[in-house]
Image (cartoon, rainbow, N blue to C red; front, side):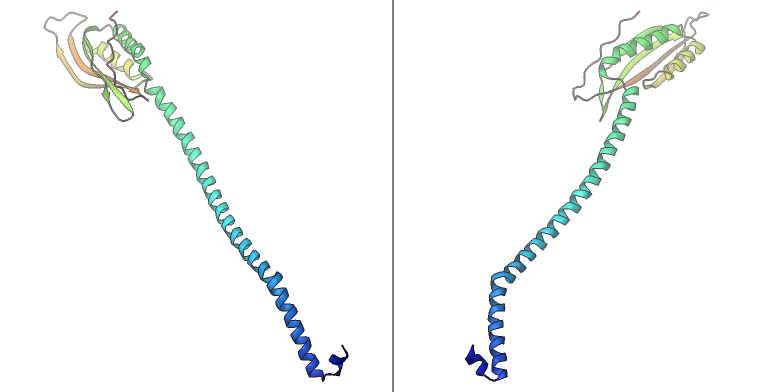
Length: 197
């Protein structure tokens, strides 16, 4: 220490700078540089986690939207199921149609159920029907058919006068009445005709 004090002031200053530089270099190499690397690594990890969090939040919002859309579509599907009968309901619906025909005082001459026609989400079940009656009773039948909760369509309607008219039977009507079934399975089956009453 005495020899250090014997040195001129600028030499003492240089020695302090040199010793301070060595101490700083040791501190920098031993602690600071590793700490900086750790800080950079942690910073990158934090950035990645923040990106992942933003992605997860976006996916959560999308999931909520998808869930809402799913619920809306399920509601629509339930409404459609109300008007599109399931396969097991067809026989009962066809019996109701026969009851409407009888209630309208029409006589069934022909009732032939055709094979189901497969569509994307539903099957069409066409029925060839020929009836004897009069215009008024035929109108009653179509009116009652339109009030069924299940969908029915009428195609190829042909009306002609009867050869031998009576007060009750003046016309013949033939048409294809179709109902539609909602199906989850892919097998299209033939629907047996209902038993006449």
